[in-house]
Length: 86
Picture (spheres, rainbow, N blue to C red):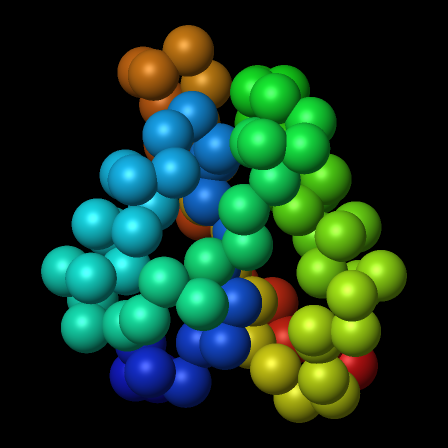
């Protein structure tokens, strides 16, 4: 799979600029990220699910879209998972 095929990036919401910079390194526009820290603040790893909730309510997800979730735990552990929206 190519990174361009991933439509939505749900990344731990510690710093918006870090997410934008990560997407830039991947050659993707910042619109591929979902940002909620301004709305909910930092909620730890749960923030990616707040972002998912907002993306669903905004109608951003389409059948067949690939979504990636990347979270961290206390800055020491990182995990990512790729899903296909059905």
